[in-house]
Length: 284
Image 1 (cartoon, rainbow, N blue to C red):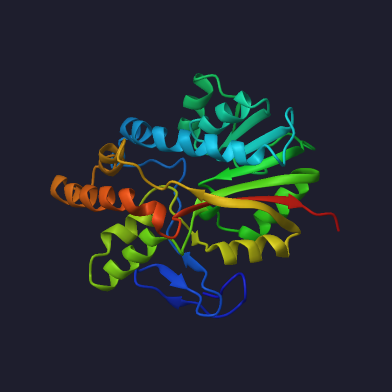
Image 2 (cartoon, rainbow, N blue to C red):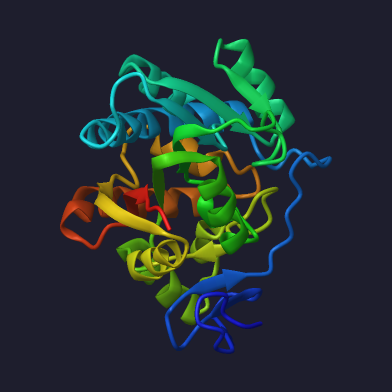
């Protein structure tokens, strides 16, 4: 496997199916994607939603605040991979005309039933012909995409002149990712597999650092306007967040809880595990 950023040969990393570029530091995986395919009952989706909502809602409020200086009220916004519609709600509350796009048919139906304006399908194929937006966001989505270059070009095509790209995603320089890689070297691969979302319908297909992400985006005509950190964990909702994966036995979940709770306390002093990036489309 070659690196899609610098074309250097990638080397197998500590978790089977993952790779690291020794030249630029990009991580990739070869995990299979199974969105909208029949699954076993490994995931408790109701528990997963309850677990994620407090942290995601708080992060989305902070992200929308950060966008205010770069995106005027009334701007049109497309949230790709909108899931439950929480970012749409935050954007609408700030006066943006927000639309969601969600590939998972079941999740899109639930978001639509809650009143969110959601299109079911993949970006950009499911969008109305010729539809363009003042801003396009990817919240915990970009790391799941198989063709980063193609996606960046598709975003450019769907953004209005001077449009804004909003990204938030896990970072390879984050303390938790580094600790999980170290644990995997010592034979404890479960935490790293969980961070890659190995075995889930939509696993991570890449792990970017801030440097590799900005390198990719600059290559496609995006210039950064702002960046910052978002919380990656909180003790509130932490237990159901660990236990929504039914394959994790209770004793192991308890150990993960204790470790994650300790990291949550000190995480603000460590390199960020989740970062946000606000970028502007430049004109050729």
